[in-house]
Amino acid sequence: MANITNEISRRRTFAIISHPDAGKTTLTEKLLLFGGAIHVAGAVKSNKIKKTATSDWMEIEKQRGISVATSVMGFNYGDYKINILDTPGHQDFAEDTYRTLTAVDSVIIVVDVAKGVETQTRKLMEVCRMRNTPVIIFVNKLDREGRDPFDILDELEKELQISVRPLSWPINIGAKFKGVYNIYEHTLNLFKPDKQHVTDRVEISDINDKAIDAAVGEADAEKLRADIELIDGVYPDFDEKDYLDGLVAPVFFGSALNTFGVKELLDCFVRIAPSPRPVTAEERVVNPEEEKFTGFVFKIHANMDPNHRSCIAFVKVCSGVFHRNENYKHVRSGKTYRFSAPTAFMAQKKEIIDEVYPGDIVGLPDNGIFKIGDTLTEGENLHFKGLPSFSPEMFKYIENSDPMKTKQLNKGIDQLMDEGVAQLFVNQFNNRKIIGTVGQLQFEVIQYRLLHEYGAQCRWESINLFKACWIESDDAEVLTAFKKRKQQYMARDIEGRDVFLADSNYVLQMAQQDFPKIRFHFTSEF
Ligand code: G4P
Image (cartoon, rainbow, N blue to C red; front, side):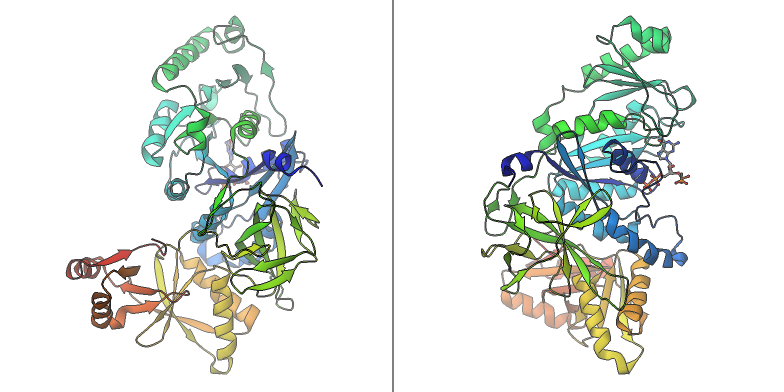
């Protein structure tokens, strides 16, 4: 067996996040090219759902099939073992992305130089901030006309609420883009558009080297020197500890499509990004170096084939070494399971694996054992803290269209909720089931999957709701009084917790005013 400390320290598990179209897929592909995991550009057909209009959501089903392979992309780069965890491009599946972020040790954010920070990036950054996840920013598409890099830096700081520190700097942008000066390594890379190859480096001693003038012209060299002087004056030196604490984000500039600035990003990333870190369980902090295996399920992927309704549970190994055919405790049920066919994710292949180290993801065949957030251990009762559920944005009643298939429908709903497809609330007054989602597409996916995987037909009925609030109070009487007053609007979530369904912001404000002793939460953990 390999040395576990060594194995841990060489692992880098991260996600690339961005607003759709900023270049996440392209950057992922280029990183895989550097890792030798793929050999030609265009090989990654990630689970990109975004370009299909909402009406063409069938495409999702097709794409779900291949997305198992690209869910986790593991490859070796030099001495490092890199795991990229893919996240859905479409914002209607933002919950999936939030959950994936619970399994990464750091994040690379891609921003389009012309568009700057967009909504999706802002939301995802909030999740990173909640967890103090270290963040590196890649400003992409420098080969296109875009905004002034200093403006972009200001916007990043303001919109993402994090200090930034450029570690590379572009020489012009768009048609006049000439290259990038690497502040971190004091090198100069000249830009020649080429999708497959890395552009040559110019050897320089420092920023005053005349070789820069020879390479980019005197005027641009002078401008570069002035910019770097300004940067060094305005931004404190890069501090790795601040980065690891999630306080400062290093920024790189480049063009993913042209494989430009990507290697610099990757080389710096493997050096500074954290190896698997201690994970906080409800009971205690779990260190990756601990001898005993622990891990948690952050994603469940259903098989599309209705004849084999098996799923794959994605388990992030938090400590110890996971072994094939060993007995592990499934903490929620208290039962012991052995897994004879755990899969590793290397490049884009799935293969059976005997040992899995902290930081890695292992795929476990699942026929209904697992729920998102479940913990596996060698016997200890541990519960890893997941990410709270957020109040959904959209709500609908789910109704049975085929009374002969009630059982199938209920089973289907339960399993889809365990998979984390959407959130279920049961109205305590009339027992009607309400599904909450972050986007319209999820309703369509649920309806389709219920029919195709469970043979159950559902229809949606509209319901006018503003927010779901998890409520609590130190005063049991007040809580009872509130629940009585609002009985038509009280529901239970999947864990049986009390949820108040407010139909408008006004109603919510009034409730908060009338019941000051009750705390209203927009996330399920508080
Ligand atoms: P996403 O996963 O974040 O949604 O973005 P993706 O990589 O699919 O990139 C979105 C579009 O931007 C793609 O073009 C891609 O080729 C382009 N792109 C990515 N990086 C760069 C870059 O550095 N410079 C320029 N000029 N374009 C870039 P598309 O035409 O929408 O798709 P495709 O047909 O090329 O795949």
